[in-house]
Image (cartoon, rainbow, N blue to C red; front, side, top):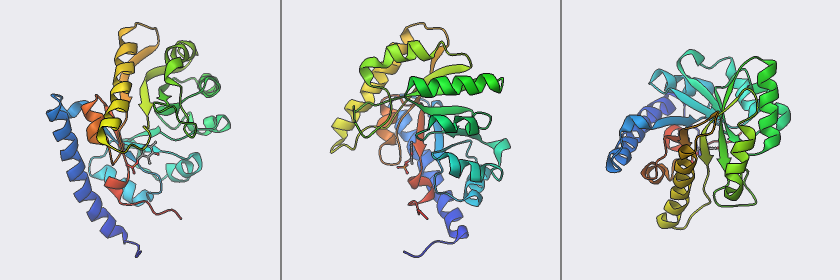
Amino acid sequence: MMEKSLNERYAMFDENYKVIVEKIAYAALRSGREPKEITLLAATKTVPVPLINHAISRGLTCLGENKVQEFLNKYDQLDRDHCDLQFIGRLQTNKVKYLVDKVSCIQSVGSVKLAAEISRQCEKNSRNMDVLVEVNIGRELSKGGVDPDGLLEFIDEIRQLPGLRVKGLMAIPPICSDSKELLRYFSGMEQYYVDIAGKTMDNVSMACLSMGMSSDFSEAIQCGATMVRIGSSLFGERVYQ
Ligand SMILES: *Cc1c(COP(=O)(O)O)cnc(C)c1O
């Protein structure tokens, strides 16, 4: 494959961005929702900093990185004043300290151990951290996240940790063979989200339901997603170095 020049990638982003924003709006309206209820988070793993900053200059307001080292390599050069930075990848406990003063939200909290370390680092830095609870909606061994059966108990435990603010749920559904199966997972998530929102628990608000990626964001929006995380449909296929 010939690698594209940055200028070509800028132009491709501009076109993709327009299309994605339109598709998000269409999916929202079709479900009787307002397009502005849905935040587009750009998943920027492997995307070079100049292209990310170009995207921010075009109006992108939220991005998510997956790997701590890659995030740190990019951090100083990102146009941070104009974009909210979040962490969306699997996170090892011993790396929380590198993120805690740099991101607004950690979307991938799936263990009490991780939540406790985020809390500890927050206290050290005198700050609060928004977190989403990652739900292992397909109960897959290969994936992180909390088993749906233990979700309420998990939230009830971590909400008591100082510095942590539980702001919602995140999920990556299994690879599905048809959209009916996919919708079943996404509506399962919506059900958990609504159920938890209906219980009043201190320090828990269901403000964000983060689900849907390049291949399935329309279905996710249909099932109530308030944030979609999109990478390859915006920036092109990922090139791993
Ligand atoms: C890479 C990634 C995405 C985006 O995936 P695409 O299929 O490229 O849109 C979303 N969420 C997470 C957690 C990711 O790692």
